[in-house]
Length: 231
Image 1 (cartoon, rainbow, N blue to C red):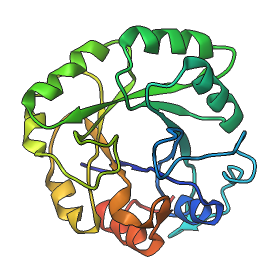
Image 2 (cartoon, rainbow, N blue to C red; image 1 turned 120 degrees about the vertical axis):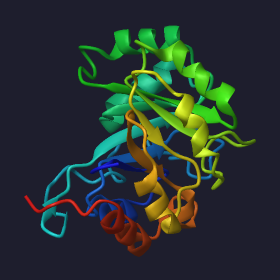
Image 3 (cartoon, helix red, strand yellow; image 1 turned 135 degrees about the vertical axis):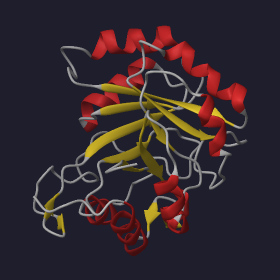
């Protein structure tokens, strides 16, 4: 992957958010699923948790321009709409059993009045080749896919799946590679080839505790994976 999209998910602490935002990443994920240890709870808006989108934070002279992703699991559409509005989300990531019809209805509610530029990421849990085939349900509905490891929990397991099963993906929806990617996987990620893979999703393997990321490890990973040129 050349200059992949880098998404860091499961953020919650304001200072940690500011530090990670300065690393030159592209997407930052906030989990609105109450059963997650990274749940963004008791917060009605982005005030007090997500810093203003200023460009003061920089890594190697590159300005920060992070887009915000809200992660939901089989949530009520009205709850998602409220979070999109309150947190000024750029993406909605659906990590449950949401249908294509649900995605269409959600888009119709958000676009154009509430969030005209909102994008939908549909996560698919993968263990074997047949799991990948579910992408067909979302052709023409989701803007991006995220292939994660199938496990008893919903994401953030730290477990990897066999990336070779993605060779069978022949869809037209770009996707993010997820599932237990850690600091030691830089070369493995760089070696992964698929024409529709546009980036990666990082979470538990970079944590010191749930929702707290190790900034030094992330910084080293970002530099090792994609040393983007200065503007």
